Length: 470
Image 1 (cartoon, helix red, strand yellow):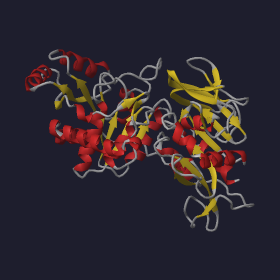
Image 2: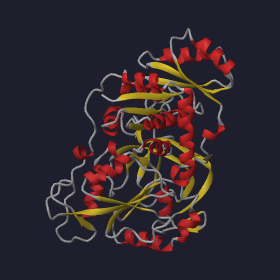
Image 3: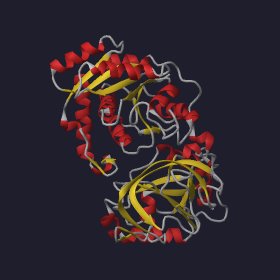
Image 4: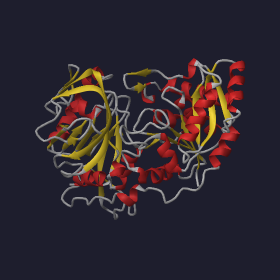
């Protein structure tokens, strides 16, 4: 059993990230092993969670992965920890559009059988807070709202009025935080600025969040509440059980590294393909399970930074370029001409390349007029329009990731446009909000705006590594 709390709120902007990250850091500073989690597809908050805990931030998304995988993925990430803190998404009952409770914070809390702490922005109310809390606590009897943290409290007098009003609600107040500006993190067009782009300032922000939570919350009561969670049903997800090793080619050892017997399921003397994974400040979006699945499938995962590394890792047999903010770093990415040429050469050689969103932009001819890798016959630019939402998708073309007809669920989140939006062999057919095809499949390149979670379809990693091995 893992002690666990879900941090929810009536709406976005109530202070979930401040409270959740502050709790993580405060518990970690007290000597506890803390497992950080985030409801939904967001990549940015988990970076702050990782900074607070020293462990990978992990997402729990009942839409992308399906409800049945939420608890097993949680158990996998939280293995060996003393407590897990799960930050919710949007308002507590807000889920996938038109899908009822699916993928909401409340839905995930029920799947985890976890007590919920509701963070309430009290800045413009006093006695009304009791009605709000009563509504959220009684809306779904299967959701256990077991504590309140009042945020943005104006004064001692204000706090006293709020506590008095909540005495009849039956939900205890476990913390009250004053209005403090310095704990906020800067935002821009897609939310918070990622940790990788402001690490020193991010460390300071997380420390301020921890200090505020320690000063305003009853950590002992919160820990006791977390420990009241019942045992989870079922076992933990394991990348090794769902992604068997690829079969190495017997014809060549190029792009592979020797590994000892017993590792990755390979016998002594066999080799495994090297998969380079883009990282650094421009490519910060990734799910921890992807690298774990690639490794379990038999790959050696080697990170590199397209902003600074002028060559791909030695022996690269495959390339994964996830999401991020290449639009912020377009001049620097363009200036790294040696790496752009290396990526283009690798793609031209037929090596498998998987690119999502930011990766799609990087593989285009240009981004906001700056030359990129030129792997795709497409140009990218910033847009005023935000494209955001879950998508039901089907693979249109056979690719290094999936055979045509494979159904996946994904998520789009960008303020850029690629023209044309799809190649002669599109990557995906999308069913909502309108029917369209998008992305590119060209030789062994798969590039698309769609973010997917490979744990939902572990055959993706296995297929990709098999292609790299041959």
